[in-house]
Length: 240
Image 1 (cartoon, one colour):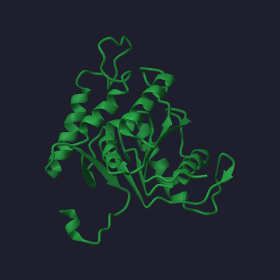
Image 2 (spheres, one colour):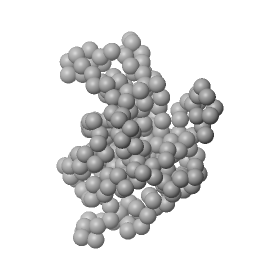
Image 3 (cartoon, helix red, strand yellow):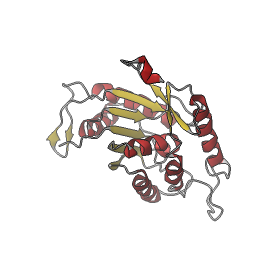
Image 4 (cartoon, helix red, strand yellow):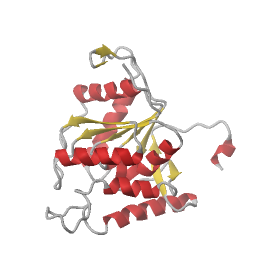
């Protein structure tokens, strides 16, 4: 059993993808691409909200973005490792969705789960193409599949991008998808403890990052990505 999609997004926590690459996701969907997202954890160690609330928010955001599918691997927040069990699970998702492109967490970031997730996805991305690794989905044996490209979205820390996507037209959708996670961001009526991302200025920082990325390519808003391998082109004018 499989469900072929164009782009598969992995995120260590619900809202990682929204904060970092949801403008690109919305743009892909507008272009007619099928995009699926797999959150690795429920974000249960987060100071605000609960796993149940985070699932509801993730579902609401999936609708806003027009995702074809959204799953949660239910790895342990803060404790998942790059080991055989976790790699096998990620491989199963890759083989089920059979994407051309994978988007994954930043290779290095403020939250240690982000860099660890990036390494985990890198390992699984390669190993999913090895025929001697056996996986199954709902009791059915899966065929080997390796995505053509793996790109890492840039998160909290500034990392030099390999390329930047113009998200000027889809920035409003990005903002709506972020706000779907209302338990996590600024809300004066929320009495839970304040966090790094719940300050009144945090969304201004997100806009500032999008403006900075956009400035690099001469547009209003952008999102940056790091390629795990060189990007080949046939026609240099494609870069104009």
